[in-house]
Image (cartoon, rainbow, N blue to C red; front, side, top):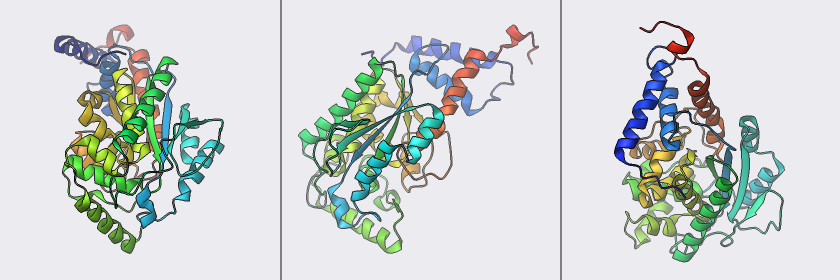
Length: 346
């Protein structure tokens, strides 16, 4: 496993060389806008002047939440396993967009309240049949949370060993916007009311009920709000814990992390608190329409690539943004320089 730590002088020298290469291309300085920033970041992640993307994958982790039975979602909990079946059948939005982008989809059962049996295309890393309800205590034990994180790390190790160097992250779990809201409130300090949104489409009464239940969960939690492992175990889900573990493992291997929306970014808040170096490997695909995602991005000082009003999850934003990473690599590799094209510079 490669360490992310590099002497500051080496990183600075590489950044200067990358910027010089970008500036030498046949265009006015800065004319490719955010693509130039993206190319620079990809080069720094991979520690090379010509970044390349290899065997891109999207990891979708699925899990159920005990608190969902209290009515914090507009959909019943059965939708989690039904959507996993949809992923396996190739009919969900993430299947469509991953195919379009040429990305391989990996679906993992981190803790769905359903028995799928051995299924082609499904990774069975189930910790339990859904979490306990954080309305009554911790959602996960410390051991369960650690197991889910380790499953994420193990999946990444296998993907990396097979040649993958860019990984998008997605999730499925009825009730997980509520868990993400609680994690976001605790780890960013943003007001809970600003972190709670309509999720799968709650009406005004449903949103009011969701906010009241989450406030109740907070009042009963005897944990330090800035203790990321404790916050994750108390309020999170198996899919969120698995994503956090996967992110740490991917960053340690200098993979490019393509971050999706609100729930995925809540996992990233945990991962960066545990391993701050993860942040440097992250490309933020989009800004979700879900309340709280913009707050997460501001906290992480992140500039998303897309603004499409998405709030679906599944990793859909990551798949839609991936072609921009390809464009950044291609202009670095194939676009002529002023010198090679014989074009006069300003």
